[in-house]
Image 1 (tube, one colour):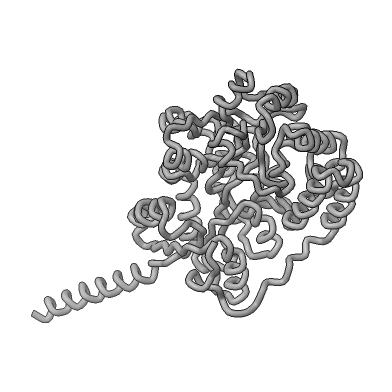
Image 2: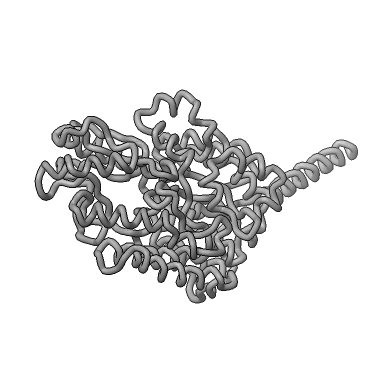
Length: 434
């Protein structure tokens, strides 16, 4: 009998020890993101993909916390300053170099032995937004780009049988569209930010800086960038392009669907709106018109990053790797989060998709906005120069010479991160809504 009691005691001790060990290995990781709490994206993440990951990794619980976009950057910086930031975040690609310069992101190419394999499987333009001073601080998570969306019915009325494929075609089509009368435009856009003008600059063969992002002189004020702005200024002043470029407030989407705007650059988000609000409207699409630099558009999207303050690095990296799986990428693509992996273009889902293939084709040459911590300031300079040129207040060369000098001064500054703000941590509930 004594032996039986001893055996039972040993079994109980083993069970208690095993339970305690399992509990000690269990971890919870947190990822912050900007998906709307009531959205297909958030539902896919929290109701399908995270449960799938947790089933594969029963000792890891993933807590996904949504934030409004407008308050997200501040919330992250403030939380990190207080030592309470998340393990992972879905970060806008334009913020990645800035956060890397802050010293708060883990160098993924250092901590992940398989980083190169994962990186090589993504679009180069998307991957480049994670690079900073010789290291990579994230991986692409989702992406998008802008392609030429055109109204063939309107173009047909103007005697144009196909969308412009080259810059010469754009020029030739202008005279035809002008026969339709005032208030009709071949093309429209809403400003001179990088998102608006970089496709034209790059397609003309121009650029903002040298390839190492250390010098703007000779690039942003070089002959090809100057030519791109001169072209845009001519198109706006002639009435071929709308004055939405210079802040008129014209409703580009309204004009497109209303038959007064022949084309615009837009992303895949246009299609669900068109299907729900204009079900009988035929949306047509083509690649960005090509110039001396080719057909080049701009990359959008988000990266996934890991903070170097995480106490759960192994678990966080497991989830990060999961986001790079074909299963994750395909399922997110079904609700509009376009894959970052060119290999998936060959799958039946994408080959048979009604509009993704052309976006994926454009992504092969699309480029990222200059991935430096100073990009926000650089873009403000570029935007102001564009306004001056397109309003006719300055020649393209003069305005871009000034811009080059100002951008050079920014690039010459040591990569000193701006102070992390202090104060109360911004919570999802208290963050301003977008």
